[in-house]
Length: 126
Image 1 (cartoon, rainbow, N blue to C red):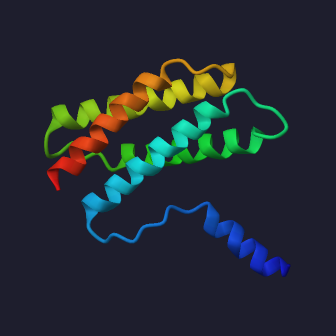
Image 2: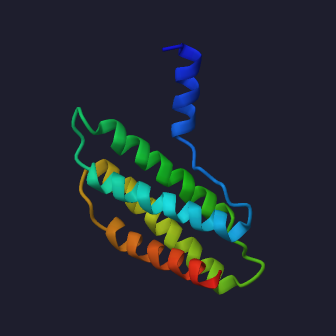
């Protein structure tokens, strides 16, 4: 295999496939990827030689998406909604970090439920 081609394929596997152009569809795609990453992380929480990369990459991906969501919260529109969203994202981030260290799924399960509810609410708006 050509090393340049391999590098390109590797790069493409770690990107969110965004076909949508409107903001709400992109937001829903971000939530879908975040939920998927958290689930993969939880499934691979106890590291071994076969799943360490999955745990690590899903953890990194989840944190990156959470950061993106946190930095896109608009505190100018509705401070109460913005504050609540930010708190859910922060709760998720903190608990993922704790679980990465402890290798035990704990509060990310409730965070995942909240994220799924937020995602479903956004989808219902469209």
